[in-house]
Amino acid sequence: MERNKILLIDMYGVIIKESKGYFVPYTLEKLGASAQDRLKRIIKDEQCFTKAQRGELTSEEFLSWLGYACPQAAMEEYLKSYLTLDEGFREFAEKYRKIYAFCLLSNDVLEWSQFLTGYHRINHYFMDKIVSGEVHLRKPDKEIFIYSLKRLGCNPEQCIFIDNSIKNLLVAEELGIQTILFNRDGVQYEGRSVADFDALGRMLECMWKNLEGENYV
Image 1 (cartoon, rainbow, N blue to C red):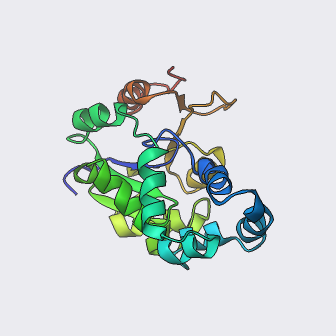
Image 2 (cartoon, rainbow, N blue to C red):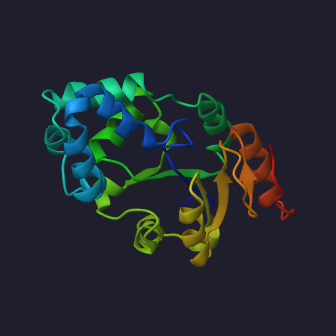
């Protein structure tokens, strides 16, 4: 690869400000109180969201199972109206994509990820996009990181993984991948942590100059 330093970047809670946790209350509100017991069973006991993220269900199958009469319209309304792109990502990507190769590494329903990156016009920033719904692997499973390294043809030492989940970061670290917590919620964490994309840029500059990576807020 021409750019031998790779940023593995999460979508929800990083590029998109909100986490996936917003979808369940959104669905409970949209489909009404009478459907709550059924929805909680499907989501919690039958793991329908996890199955969709693993690519075992398409978006249409997943949303139809939940009870949406028009799955495509429901998907678009949720992704467009309830999720927010962090505009700091554009500035960050414009500045650093000539230095680093950007790869999306996201737990997501494949069609949702495709819609989000297209709707926000950010596809061109990524040299590759590894989405759980396409590869049938999910974070924090170690296998998705092993798969990503093989697919990208790189060593762990070439990569920096940016995610909002400490659990995901710890698994990546076991493989020798450097990590940074994108810490919107200000949680306690002993590793490298940033609060926004400006701080992420400063952190990266320090890391590749072999300086100690402290927290940047």
